[in-house]
Length: 417
Ligand code: ADP
Image (tube, rainbow, N blue to C red; front, side, top):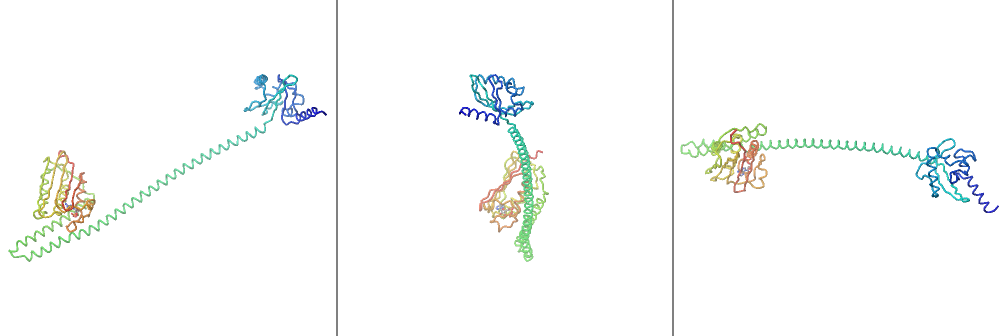
């Protein structure tokens, strides 16, 4: 056998054995030759397709378009895959649609163009692709579901976190309340015990003074002892005054503590009222201590609670007297202007050490330089509470060893109501 005969036979065998449809057609689309695989694929008998138009293998709906494709292929023939990226279908003899992939090539024989179509059955590939698609979409659905579940769980977690936080805050608040109540109770207990200590201490001194003076008066019976008797009578008076003032402090404090006190304003003349207060304070003054009153501004009436105001002024004046030496001047200043009453009590006494100034209005707090002078440490606390009840302000300036100045400012409607 010649080389070319051998070659021809090999090509022939390949053509017959190929597991790929090979269709040779002419430029007009007439099928000239098909390999056995093509017949099997499309369900034709051998020789049945030869002489048929290639469009016999194309679904009727696509035939017209295919004729156009064919003529444009003939005008500029190239080797190429057909319908790349498209799903192609071919038609079997029995009318079934077959998913296929087609590539085209051509050659010239005896001056005529022959077109070769290679047809692969991609049914299996399509099936796998479809399966893969289904699997994918199932997977996507699952992912979506899981995401939903997760975000739901996340939201629940957030909610329970919030609940936990709320509960913790509630607990903290409750703890705080209990702690505050405990502290308050402790403070109250401390106050009570300080009260007992102060009361017994402060009562003992005037009481023993009264006892001594009383027994001495007994001894100074002679008319010549009149001066001595008078001195002891004065001591008794002063001691009783001290006791009364302590008792008054306790009583006002008790009233203030129980929340019973409230401001009940009345209309009264400020100057007359101040004169009365000064008259009440004078007997407390030490020898040669002068109580002076200076007034500025209107001389009209005010609308204030006289009991609270009296308590404020008597406490401030008695402190000024108590913490100043004999022979000094104590000044009560008053000013009524634009509906505001300003009252000042100024002394030249022992003053208040800077270290004690911050806690001066606390109950039982006494400055270190006042230890040798009788007192309960309640007066200024009462003053502050009374001023608060009247809606006023209280302030002071003091220098140790030089004196103090207390100031009260109260709004009044000038008694016009
Ligand atoms: P007390 O019964 O001790 O006088 P207060 O509450 O009236 O109580 O005063 C508290 C403390 O403030 C006093 O113990 C004293 O140390 C100081 N104090 C008050 N007023 C004066 C003042 N005019 N001069 C000096 N110290 C004062």
